[in-house]
Length: 373
Image (cartoon, rainbow, N blue to C red; front, side, top):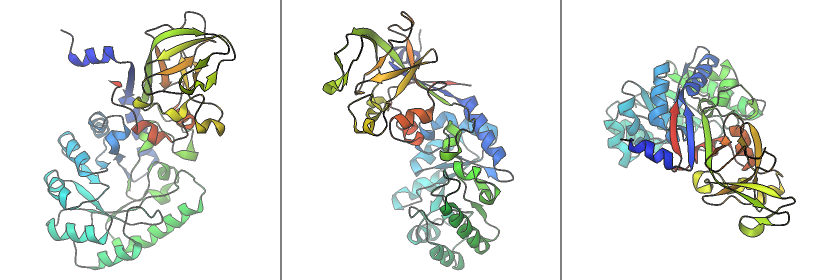
């Protein structure tokens, strides 16, 4: 009898292949670049859309022992899979999440005096991390608040950390400002581990590495900003099934709004993927505001050869111009690459006017997932 999951995969019109061996190789690269620092892993947002239940255990097999999630729900889901790991909750703790944080031995990352007072007053000395804001104005205590906390009677944190706002721009002066401020605060936290470097921060060098690095996007094959290309391995390949091939004449239009008028007779591959699957409408070939700024919309690939999107991407369907491919080289039932070895994650994100992070984390639920490696 065919397993139900195989039946679902065979009926899908979109699929995503996630290469766990490539994920592991990228983590090992980040570990080696981290020098003497221990290398952790950001697995929040379902491991950036790749599936934390698969990604996190594989990273643990490679030697990762420090994992970062967004909230207590994510941490609780991972605890049975990572019984020995340190799981840090970046969004901290509040009263409604307190019991779950304790029950699953999670480490909250404290970002305000109120959170600090609540945790230290109720957690019975359980470990926590302290986040200091060094210039991002997002999460974290101010430097003054952090020093006041450390000089008080509360138990000391197990980790002190901050987050770089422009690590993807290696020469930006804010990096130097944040690095120097964080370094100036470290003496007040003598004997406590420190963490500053995200993916981009790891590439900034040893001055940012401290005791623990926290790579995220680089693990999943995404280049961290201006550091591209760094020969990270492709982790995610997304494809869509060709539903039909249709022929249209020059002068006819394609998709909603008749936004694209054909300049030649075309063969069009209609594929079962759309913005409900995370193939963003902004990546359309025509009829969206982004095309006035970035002329070319998204592309796909058939056998390593690129084909452009025609007209507007719709909820469930997208049209591609396959006229330049040899007759018969693509047919109904074939698969067309949306991103992967030919169409890089960065190219796909650029075409949609977004970033690799958003593209990965917005992968829809209809994709049939296949884990390899």
